[in-house]
Image (tube, rainbow, N blue to C red; front, side, top):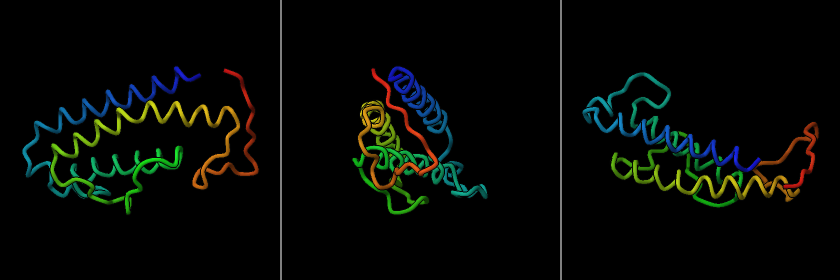
Length: 126
């Protein structure tokens, strides 16, 4: 079971690296241009993806920074944003494993991650 989540985290990191490689080749004006999307530009969207990952990992583990809003620009500089993305991707497999073990062993989820009364949880051994 843990191997599956490690694979998901690895795939996510691989996709992010490819996305950032392609983005690095785009001129800065195009990278920052408002395209009418939810987060305006590619720059806004990449920041949002990092924001989303940080929010979810904090909910799962109670660790890490909580961004102020979904549209927060955490890094205005592309190189710094890319470095932060890599750090988050390096951190994610460890935290994913940690949170999976917590859920499997019956540890209580954090307040942001409560299971509804309609959800049933079955304990399994690893």
